Length: 292
Ligand code: ADP
Ligand code: ZN
Image (cartoon, rainbow, N blue to C red; front, side):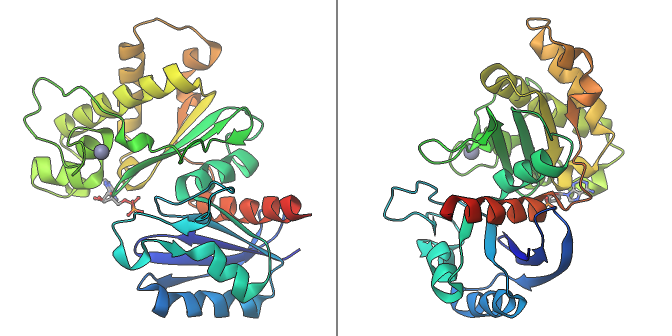
């Protein structure tokens, strides 16, 4: 079977062809410009590859409600050229094949849950901490959607008493994204996150905020494993600090075998950075079955 996968990002579009086993045969990357410029290139790629279905993991916000008139649209994105754009409709019309659609982070969560380190778990999360913060959630074996889709990067946090930085989110200032995404680190400390690798206080504060959010997610969603991905988690020495913070802030309130083995509970991604594109393959596969 030949399936198409698209990771639609704000700066680039990663296109791939693969199969129902998560094997990727080939891939390419196309810069994200306007739909007028970029879409014909994407359509030409997938047409030439003769794929049977396409899966898209997309930047958002997007409309995932199949009953809505704007299902399959990118909605209120700050990337204005793509705001209110019917991306699913455009591909369906041009390619005439089933098109699966979800958020980029739900795609990554799905890729890991199908072929990676959350395989076999009914409840898991994939959190990306990069330019922004987002989370994909699998609950009772299904991607969680709801009224929109989770926007777990914008959970509101209590500030650390020593942190004087006001927070970067234009909506909430001190949500997780506003306090802990790459741009917040850079604005607070005056240097790029990667240049702060040896500054202990940077990563302790980062772990304080990520830990706080994880405790909230654990309490509400009860995930069986949490994956932390995205550029900021390339600082792997932060992972033990995050685990310690989670245990400290949970304060012994819940006891499970998963939390006792916290090194295998809060983990890095397991698919060599292919989790997003593999998740898009699975979205394509699921849409084929849905339309059958
Ligand atoms: P995006 O979120 O744009 O898809 P990334 O997940 O790579 O892309 O996130 C980019 C952010 O991650 C930037 O703010 C950058 O400062 C930060 N970042 C990238 N690499 C590293 C690194 N090795 N260490 C710390 N921060 C990093
Ligand atoms: Zn916010």
